[in-house]
Length: 108
Image (cartoon, rainbow, N blue to C red; front, side, top):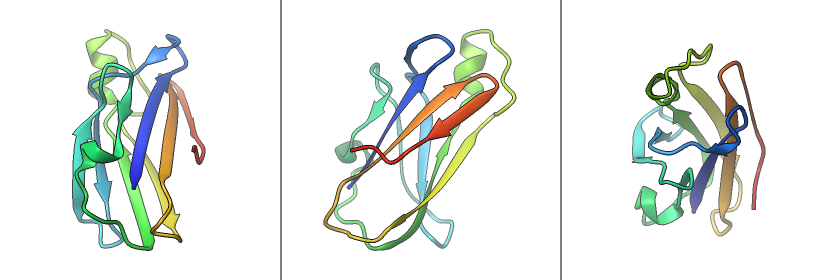
């Protein structure tokens, strides 16, 4: 299972209504969803029946989010590459954003 969460550290709030696409190792979109009001995309939102070991990436489309707030951003999108080594585990990939910086970590 894969889930994500976006927190806007500039505003101190969750980033809602951000499109996020999940890609497999062949760069094929296998799921996509928008963050909810709490900035989250739950594993069920991606609607995947299963996830296999391998390399994946999440692409966060941040440009429209900041545009809706009338803010400029240096990063129109953020891409995070990660590896799944145990398909029985839950992988939570949070993203912390601001108009001119971002960071991520493996969540729980």
